[in-house]
Length: 411
Ligand SMILES: Cc1cc2nc3c(=O)[nH]c(=O)nc-3n(C[C@H](O)[C@H](O)[C@H](O)COP(=O)(O)OP(=O)(O)OC[C@H]3O[C@@H](n4cnc5c(N)ncnc54)[C@H](O)[C@@H]3O)c2cc1C
Image (cartoon, rainbow, N blue to C red; front, side, top):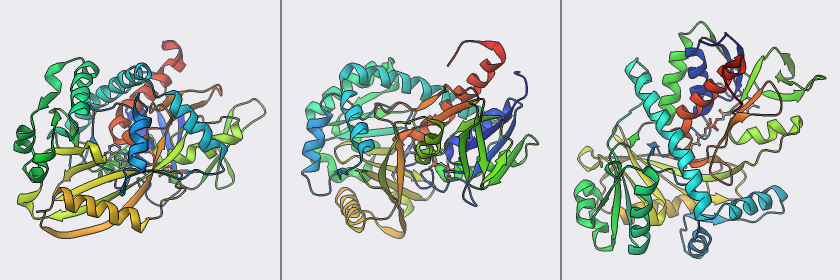
């Protein structure tokens, strides 16, 4: 067990909370600062609910630009692009384009897979040790493809990425519908699907609540509500201010989602984070309709996950959206897409739509690392996979903290 340290985490989303949990379990004294009165209220609130451990390929890939141009011309496109007079947007897009090669994609997918699978193993331990209910299930996930060539490539790369063919199975269109009968209307248009039997689902907000409740029982943990700001002191260390007052922070872990970029700027750190806006809808269909497995409609980039008695549907990447306001056109577009995909769905209730900003790096790989500032670590930039990668990233921070006590090399 490493020496007990005083650690301050900025941000009470899924990343900050899992980090706090991993560090408290190691015996550290942890304070988590969250600006809202509640935790898990921003990007971690009503996301797609998929713990998509086997399907972590970054968006930046060879051919994606051609595909994106096709999407941008479509009505109800999964991607919308609003170019702004904002150098940060241009630099981020340029870095994204540089990452669009097959080699880079494979390398980054392998890094993400490693992070994801280590988190899956640890989450099992946390659940078995009594972490509260967050509607967790392991039903497996099916990615549906309409285009034969895209499906063929996905089948090839799924096995290569996973390195273990038994973990991912290519299914025929009829086998897809046998696994997910709610999607029967798609049958004539399907080329096939990739099924990952070990993938899981859960309600990310309830997961945050379960972590908060578990942390509240720990004597080494403190949750403080207030706005943190960061600056460098005369020795070059990171100092935390809480609501404008000095705060005794010790080691600092920045985990403030998309706000991390602005927070790090006064420290001289330019984080390559961009907020990719997405939307979710939550339906309460009649119970016999709910699909057991989680499903991704690849061509429309829509994910469907059963969370208890509800069906969570999440989609859309709006590049250049600056806030989480609900764009009525995009919501109507998503509703229409769901109605076309699941025309037989008997909806009993419909919860309010939601929008969030995915804190994305151009490569899709989060920054889980030390910095050149001795007492500052980063756990940011989890993009579209923050729920999936949260526990693995928390373990990585735990290990970096342990190495600060002379147990190993740099991160
Ligand atoms: C539509 C959509 C669908 C998604 N679907 C999935 C999915 O199916 N599976 C998956 O794995 N991921 C999914 N994601 C991604 C995932 O939701 C995010 O990657 C993840 O929630 C990011 O967590 P975070 O803790 O970094 O950020 P956040 O949840 O945004 O948390 C950051 C926290 O920091 C706090 N904060 C910010 N600034 C300050 C400050 N100055 N002082 C104090 N506190 C501060 C904020 O209030 C906030 O609570 C989806 C995202 C979206 C938008």
